Amino acid sequence: MIEIGSKLRDEKGAAVALVALSMVAMLSAVALAVDVGMMVTTRTEAQRVSDLSALAGAGILAIDPDAETAARAEAINFASLNTVRGEIAVVLPADVDVNLDSSTVTVRMVRTEMRGTPVGTFFARIFGVNAVDITTTATAIAEPVGPDWGTDCMLPIMLPDRWSESLSTNGPWPGADDSFDPVGNDNKGKVDPSPDLYSSETGYTDMSVGDPIEIHKAGGGGGGINPSWYYPWTPLDEADQLIDDGPGAATYRNRFTTCLQGTYLIGDSILTEPGAMVGPTNTGFNDIFNTDPVMTWNASGGDEGEGCPWDPTLNDGAGECRYSSPRIRPMPMFDPTEAPDHGRKQVHIRNIGQVFVESKSGNAFMARWMGLVPSYAGDASADSTTEGLPKKLRLIR
Image (cartoon, rainbow, N blue to C red):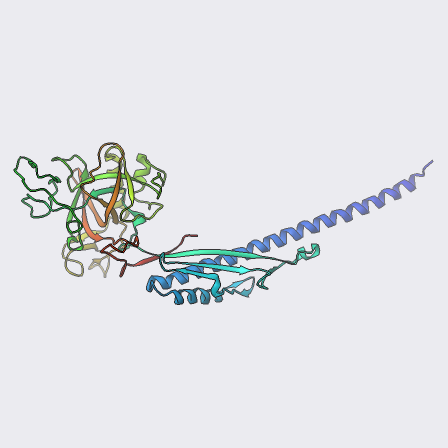
């Protein structure tokens, strides 16, 4: 017969073994939690160094687009002003890529065993893991924008670019109710033997700054294309696929006060929306106006007296020009010979102009021409360049 005391002693030994095994499991879990948390924190710090160093390097390109050496040096120097895991961050020249064609700077923050700079562990050393490798990467771009707004914040409407009007009581340029007549036919009951002309020389230019533009739905009077007729559009990607939530009235309206996801260049394709979207357009323009209702137009303001958006609250109440208003927005202009028809049609962006949105006037909205946004598509044949344009910095990777 087995004595009861002997059995109890045997069970006490099993309990000790079980507690010992549990302690090993608990220590393993603690080691894992501490070291994983430390690795996450270290990676976050390293990513921050990559991000800020890339932006610092791109900042040099915003000032001097050809300064490859200076951009690389600035990224390296900025990294050295930061720490990762309490140690000064080290970025080598080979860790920085500067692309002058795209105005981008890529910075890699490298902490690896091969470099002799791995990140040491704490409790994981018990299990033979003394260090781990961490590498982070960031790319920043210095990209031109128009006056205060970039072409990734374009209005979701487009207007025909200006043409040379062969028969007009308003002068050589079309008035609000003149239609585009490229073949020289009868024009609104008047004999017009000469065709209207459109070329790069006849479109809106900086000489048009301050000119009023009436914006109303297509088909508002006359035949053909009128210079004040707007056409809603939907963005496409490089493969001509719908992006940025695609079509739809609600999405279209939101684009009046929120920026599109992509950046658009002269020559890019966009897709017309079916219908005039009158309700969403009116509401969208009202939304823009209400973002900065204090602004008005001063016809005698500006550097050359061409007029400017005027903020009466500045300069101790005396008012002054302000070009940072959200009511200044870029808008695509299309070739009037590429007239959009009913339904959906791809149209190419011919120009990108800035307009200052004024108040509603009857069934139309009034705007003021603020000048062209030069193309920065890298087209060597383009007359406009990026020289002198303000730049914005942003992380793209």
